[in-house]
Image 1: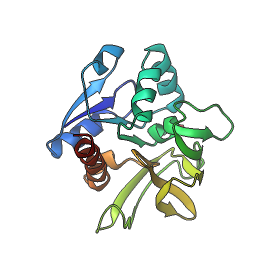
Image 2: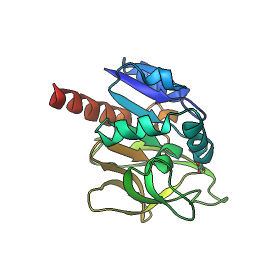
Image 3: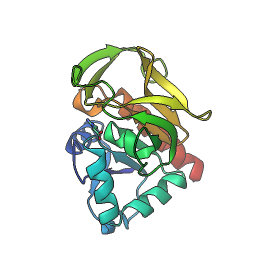
Image 4: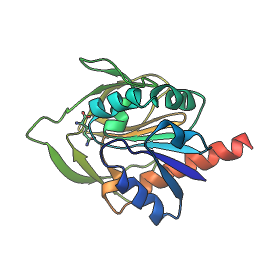
Length: 195
Ligand code: GLN
């Protein structure tokens, strides 16, 4: 199994380290030729969604990655990655627009710019999962095919739709690999189903 990590801007190296800890092979996607060879799953990290969105287009990665996701490649978007995958972003145009969610950027406002808490996420882990939020979005609403994995104070912060997994927080900035393992299982399942 090989995971491609979009490495245009933001917190991509932390995903690499987390995958290393699980013994999963990964590589960084910086330009079009990086995706010429086959891989099994994609991670879109946190950072600044506007910047990553612009670079995706400029580097000619936008269409091929969108096509891969639409044809079923498992993708895990954290924070800005969630925003990039959303079909609707309040007040602005969508980027990849593949997941049936409506997001609000910087939803927690200045007062709660960054915070950490821990929560039970029954579908992902038996133990509470530590969550790190940094200028995080939340999901305002989801379409009928979206499975909500976690709500905090009435706001959706983790969800899945088929091959797409998103979190408003940053699992890769903690030692806890529960969400990453959940994603790796999605990738394994897709691989077996296709073979
Ligand atoms: N605030 C950023 C955005 O809107 C996301 C922050 C993050 O990825 N930690 O793109």
